[in-house]
Length: 226
Figure 1 (cartoon, rainbow, N blue to C red):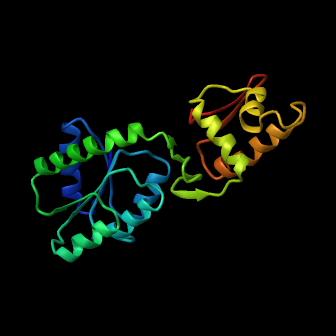
Figure 2 (figure 1 turned 45 degrees about the vertical axis):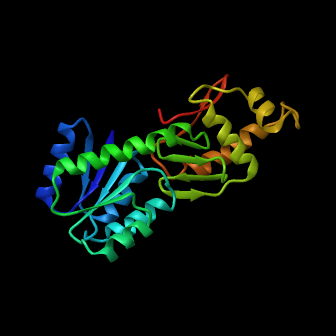
Figure 3 (figure 1 turned 180 degrees about the horizontal axis):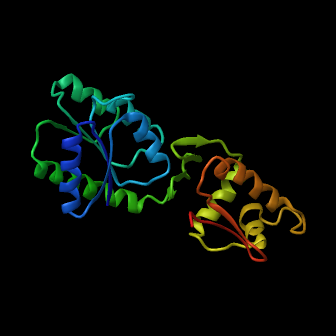
């Protein structure tokens, strides 16, 4: 389980990560909100721990930004602010839990494990969300996000992306794509599939270091971060 921590107290940040790692988590620590949001664009985490009073972008605004594209990953606010109004603000921005400093690390661990247990069944059973690296596909809402940014697709582009994603890294041929996405509504000798693959690459891969859409020469296409 990977946890990303937003905490500008260097000593507390180091101690928290050390404690979490001793309990079989991996923990990356970030000291300001702006860097934190950049970090989650290219990395996948199972939970976020957010202090509120941090430089550049505060933890509440970070929480709100995450929830604009990610409704599922658990978020715990860890803050010295203990007023009810502060907690209300955090929960209004869809944080899952709130822990007031100072706190015992064991209590944080209990809350982390509780949240992960509650979240896991819904995520495992939710067939409408597909996650591949930093790509999120919401089939119900027909929305696509990469690196935290929503990507606008046409209906056919969306259907093609979903078909590639549901293949789970397997190569699918041009013939298979035409059967499932276009239902034989055009001549398979045309370059329609190639054109739409190119459309997707420009929208999904162009601005990212890690490319997800790949061609296997002579066989077809596959979607994978590798």
